[in-house]
Length: 269
Length: 305
Ligand SMILES: Nc1ncnc2c1ncn2[C@@H]1O[C@H](COP(=O)(O)OP(=O)(O)O)[C@@H](O)[C@H]1O
Ligand SMILES: [Mg+2]
Image 1: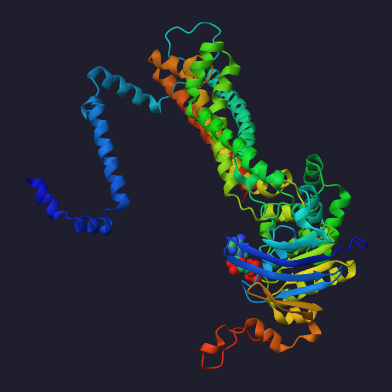
Image 2 (image 1 turned 90 degrees about the horizontal axis):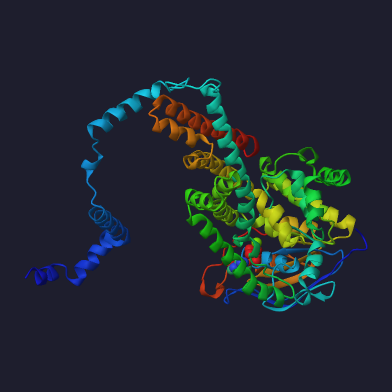
């Protein structure tokens, strides 16, 4: 997987939904090959939209999104698919096919670039070495015994591991994860973040992860981008961020109009 | 004279009040339906007394019903030629032909329904918000997609709007008593119905998994086959099985036109007033439908639950 490293870049990117909702506003961002970055900020800040831009599934209203210095807007559909193949995403809602087995959900990660016949063969009669590889990855994420289980029979935490496994089986250069711990208990959350960071580090993957949990973000990610109302409030190495930065991310609006001191909506650690 | 007084009672505000207090659209629709029903009854000259049978009819009806508990196991005719196979064999043969006609028709219809239903589903063209260099794709989405989609919808409606018995009459006139024509007569409207329902099932299937596969670089065909179709398949097969039951009934009824299915023998026995045999054939048909119902239920439990 090394040698297939990739960089991502946003230049003055804005995203408008329905001509009025400004999800992102003039964002600049560069994530170098093998870098690990966390996106933090309140709900509605634009984290999901940012990750969708980076995965080439959201078109910027203005500005440029670049994958390895190629502007995604300039790509043909085939080239865009090629770029998407190199980006593995763990979606917030997991986006698995519930009535397929774990094996098939993971295999589906590597459909890109195959002919219809080739993909039918992969899904219906998977070659032993592919099954072997899926098994290896499931072992790595800790659910090897679920290979032939139907996905909707698994717990939330196990399903999330399937989503991680699908992204890894894709053998991407970039790993994107949208709130990968929103659906699991705290102990599991820690494990999952640690796993994603560890894998990215070992394989030299570029990792971008949005996280609600500031504690985990500060512990595991060397660089954090704070988003609020579609604007980056900060973008710095984590060791140069302090509690006040995070406070400004979540502080209440219209502070001037209130007499009493604002009560933070989130306990900042 | 009463008009002005009515107008004063039902002043504008009174109308509005009545409307707000619940006459509303629902009331209007119910009222319109009641009026339409009455009008239809008057136009058609419907008279409940028509339902009272004459004395001959009454006796025949009684006899027919009385045979419900005594279906025939042997022929009721006074003269049965030497070498005629026993009645149960004949019934089984009729059942077999009925099943074969229905199975052939439903196989064709499922195949056609999957193809047309996929084309008539919007799932293919659900928006790709990134879309790359999209000029070609935009042209495609604005011109080709609506033509394919709309054209398929029209074709489906045409197939559906003519009943299988009418298709059978048409084909009978054109090709004579051909088995293939009978199968096609059932298959055409069934293809239309299956396609319409398959398209709706596909359109209502969750699209998150499909979007995820697309985000991983899969082509639209792959997204459709492996992200969307698997989730729609349980409903699709359940509906196909239900339509197979319907096809069995259609196949039986085609016998009235001379095809060797249950309907053919049923009609013959009825005309000869052999009511016991009629019941035997009816029970065979009911048993057939029940067996298919049980079978589809068992398959569903195995694959879906
Ligand atoms: N598809 C969409 N259509 C309309 N508005 C959207 C859409 N996606 C996101 N938004 C809006 O954009 C803003 C940012 O959303 P999102 O990126 O999901 O934030 P986050 O992931 O940080 O919670 C929100 O105001 C949200 O309502
Ligand atoms: Mg989000």
